[in-house]
Picture 1: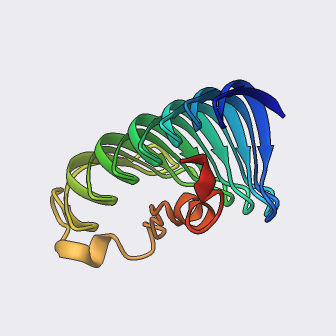
Picture 2: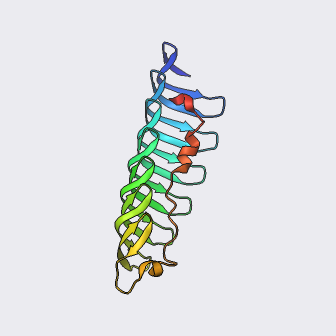
Picture 3: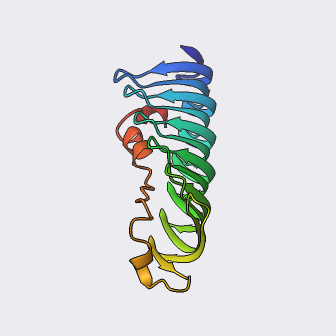
Length: 186
């Protein structure tokens, strides 16, 4: 349903795949381009910018497990600045590179603890400040997700025991939804 140029969608239209995926929005030469909404049979949705059939520009992904991502995309991946809200109440605000946290970011755990600092390939890595829910602040260095405490009286990880909930910072939800479904959008 929509406009065509030759035998391919061009302009505004809606396409429903036999597997239940649906795209409604702008098309250019047979590929989703411009603003649109992609829905998966699982209930996950992406609404935002598309380029050459891929999520590209600014958009919002809502996963079936309750997590959301609102921010920049490049070629179906989180890339640039964005905010991810996890189903457990944790929130990450910061920079992404190829679907992983990378650069400056702020991760707030649902218990009120917070980390503000550097990330590399989806893992806390580099300099940052860890703030406990009670307001205590610690300047820290991290290496591959492991804190290297820089305050007097702390010996390595012994000070961190019990204070740091695990950081699950992957983007598997979007990848799982995208693989094998709705490939005709491209």
